[in-house]
Length: 68
Image 1 (tube, rainbow, N blue to C red):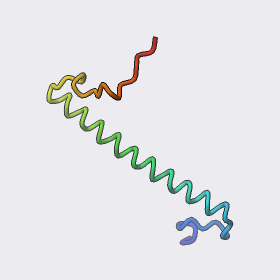
Image 2: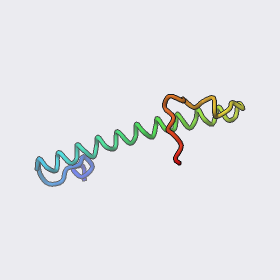
Image 3: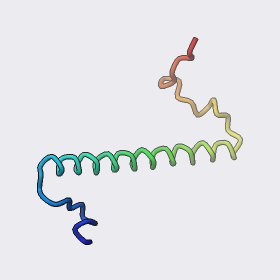
Image 4: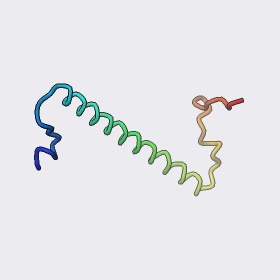
């Protein structure tokens, strides 16, 4: 059971180890993105409760053009 919890899948096949590392990195990337989005959401919620205009919080230099 302990081997299963540690990601042991029956051998040290380099392809399996590489895939496991890739998946672990992907999980870390997604967790980081989730934390960033939660912080952004919290900031927007706080701004909305303060009565700040959402237009003030938009960074015009990063804004995307409207679709025609």
